[in-house]
Amino acid sequence: MKLIRIKEVMSRTGLARSTVYKYISENNFPKPIKLGSRAVAWVESEIEGWINDVIHERDREQPEPNT
Image 1 (spheres, one colour):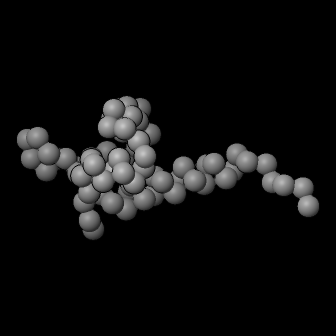
Image 2 (cartoon, rainbow, N blue to C red; image 1 turned 60 degrees about the vertical axis):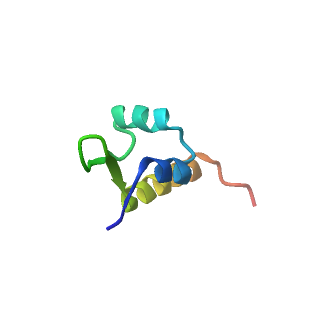
């Protein structure tokens, strides 16, 4: 299991820091793990899972092309 910090989370998701924390407060994003009094990190696999869920949701919403 690998932990990643906020800059890596932002880089992988394309989200701004404020958006990450907004989504967390709305229960729409993985919660961080507290590492110390002023440090948090996310479980890499949970972030990857969130990204895959977003892609899956996008693909579900798109109508299939007529063939």
